Length: 450
Image (cartoon, rainbow, N blue to C red; front, top):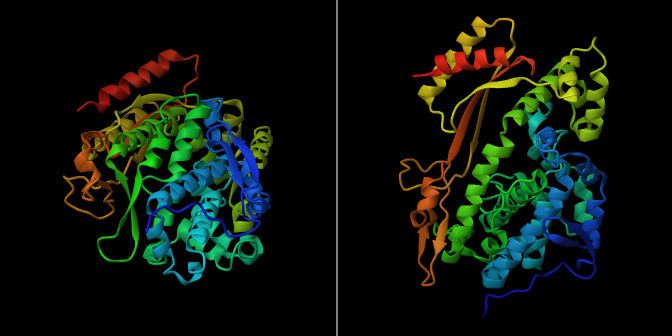
């Protein structure tokens, strides 16, 4: 039996009859039922939520939205699924058919679930997304709010089940936010396609953010990478499938990881982006939680409504959030006076913390802010790791069927830092007063020396 399988749809009416033009992927196609999801008020809301919050204050072109990103993730996820089905469709069909709800159309239903999860994965984002999430969502996050919307019949749940098949909403929610205990191992690969080591979400946002910011850091040969993806059966006998990669795709995978590292350092954790993220958090803290104390209230706001509030509050000095609103509206920000390299360790971190306190005491009339920007580049298991917890084993498949850990075949991946951590000091010094800024910066450098 050949492994090849053509992309399958759920039936008449589910063919991709509509298309929308995307600056990254060309035409993105979708069916009539998918169009009704795209037109749903919760998804339409993503048209008014910027992908990168206030990054446009640094990179003016970064005005793209979570709406276009979500469409792009759906397209990339479909390409990954179809590429795997072309080579191992028989294995996928056999595996997915063991799940009762998918038994009658295993590939068609699995493919539709991947598309829905990719399309809806960001539905629960609050205004300004990650920048304000910690304050607005409090003990939750956007993923949990997305799952809630999918599991609530009055929001998206009933509509998805009616448009596609019974259980579509529940399985979509599990793919987006379910734990390994909630996901049967046979469907874990669907979650990995949307959000894994070589996933549709990461692929699209790196390419899209790079394009709109006008930088080349996030570019890599994603088409080649997708074509080189493979499947292997879980060696632990769980009945699940794991995404792997053929030898020819190692270079493309390396480029993906390097793209993520460089976009983190140059765009996502840019010094001015960090200070404006701080202003957003302080603004919403000062504003109070009354406007966001229920999921319905969170979902009723977007960047446009929130920015209108910020512009209004910038002219109301009697409000506690006025100070932060005015800084955002008028782009009057603290200045960086100290920054470390991108690999701060615990010893250096303690030293720079002491330096910050010392400088702040010497300049009590200057408002200073301490910031730690850290992120994980990848979670691949390295040969030097003594602990395997929270590490991912990702394999290379050779033509003879043998498999090897990817990092054992790639000296580049072994050398790319798995994480980075940068510490910055910001001082509220007027732009024109360069002498004071230089004086503070010199003190920071002196005190932070070993």
